[in-house]
Length: 145
Ligand code: DHK
Image (cartoon, rainbow, N blue to C red; front, side, top):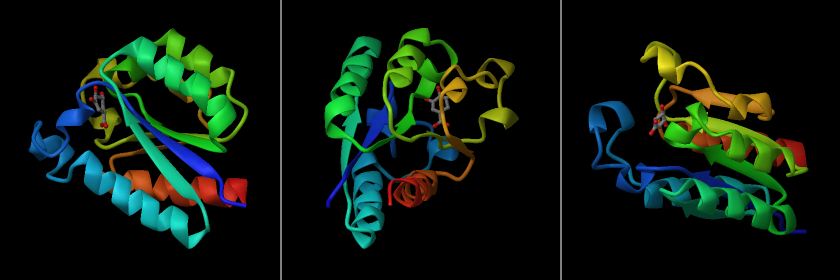
């Protein structure tokens, strides 16, 4: 049975490829989506990518994932470090959750070292560039079978 994995992205990631490329690289979210779709397809699964600059929209997308997704890969971007609402929404999701950061947040400013989402995530990938998303898809495919 084909299962769908939701790939959720927080604020400013719509600018991926253009925004601070020395930190976030030159690839776009469309590139991320096609790389992730290829990895998921190897295991017979599908992906759906979502991005929003608004915290409440991300919360609502996580609610939709309760019915639509077998797993979530999430880069909450700046909300990683601030959002109890996103943590609470993820706590209401039953499948595997992998947290992704393109940059190595632990090499950066101290305010990026804490993640609310890590309290829920089954795994965390940071500092692997946009390749981290495909690594996360590989992991959730192992978890969902
Ligand atoms: C992306 C962001 O936009 C930042 O706010 C986070 C994260 C790090 C990333 O590395 O993907 O602090």
